[in-house]
Amino acid sequence: MTDQDRSKFTDRELGMDRAIPRRDFLNGAAMTIGAALLPEIDRAGRTNSHEPQNRTGYDPPTSVGLRGSHSGSFEIAHSLRDGTFWKNAAAPERVSEKYDLIIVGGGISGLAAAYFYRERAGSGARILVLENHDDFGGHAKRNEFHLGGKLQLLNGGTMLIDSPTPYSAEAAGLMKKLGIDAVALDKKCSDHDLYKSLGLGTGVFFDGETFGADRLVVEAATEDRENSGDAPDTAKLEEFLAKTPFQGPARRDILLIERAKIDYLPGLTSAEKKDRLSRISYKDFLLNIAKVEPSVIPFYQTRTNGEWGVGIDAEPALDCWALGLPGFQGLQLEPGAAPRMSYSAGGYANGGSDRFHFPDGNASIARLLVRALIPSAIPGNSVEDIVTAPVRYDRLDTDNSPIRIRLNSTAVRVRNAAHSNISRGVEVTYASGKRVFSL
Image (cartoon, rainbow, N blue to C red; front, side, top):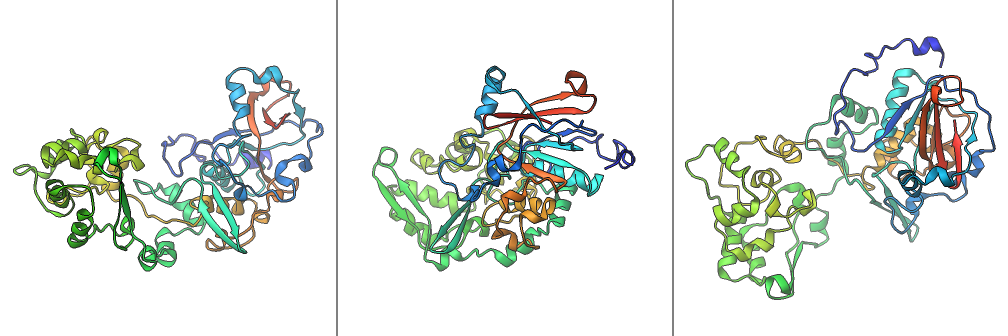
């Protein structure tokens, strides 16, 4: 990429004047470092053959054990935080590589940054992605199991395409360029009747300490309720409640909360009702507005744990309405967000985004980005075949590719030329294992 090429775009054309919302596009953190005209420095022994990702059989998705921030991915950063890294680190080895952009973080955001930069700067732009984990994708991890000659897939992190608010123009545009049409894919690939076809249903375990008896109560086979939005019909719910440790009054109250259309706040407008619900917890709503038996509360107490990590005593009733918890069906609340709603609840109240679940979660998005950046690393040409396509990890970081992804590499220092022994540009130092490299 020549100086003339670089001068074609102003800061405004490159979007340097625009704010970047925290959740604009795909969650994650990637620090990008513009490194135009990085200096030529001598190679000091770093060869691709030394990188773990180039070893025969390297395949992180098939690894077992704890696969979040796994051993080897955080120790260097922790020692840097504790102020001990440079006391024990080897002297940096100089590497004769020059890049127009270095990105720290190979998650979806970092990979998207590389995609957008190349789109602006041209196909000749040289980009290096440094990733401290043993795989790209960040939180969008992929778990593979090969059983009886068949590939079994599971997401190891982010589960699906889903957002409380519609994606930005940039995010939606990138998804389109990658071939991802969430609505079409869901219609073509998702089987919302799978559990029902297999005779599977849901169940609730009642522990003796809370409910007076240890009891597992299983519902009859039902549809995928998460996607259909349907509650069980009254007869099935009555049958379910009859098997629980609850006594008559509690069973009655649960049935009313789940199925009855009662206006618990008569005389108020929809806006006034929303205002009231925004100021009390869902627990308060059940106890003091719907007047349920206190013994009913434990049945609902953890319903909000999955979304917010806290129980119903800590979540506003209005937020719980937005996410579809029961008890509000008779209040005739108008659709849409209202003041004091949380970001997620307010977004879902306004409709949210399109949704789709790849078999490996959003790892397929990361893989599509890598295929677009380094085609030789992942064969194929469609959004469908990305799911089972093998990754050639030894093709991610090669001398003949303008874009390189270097795994197991933790950035430890970034310095402008004025603070290093180079003439101009930026010096980036990273550690991999016990070795330290500067480029």
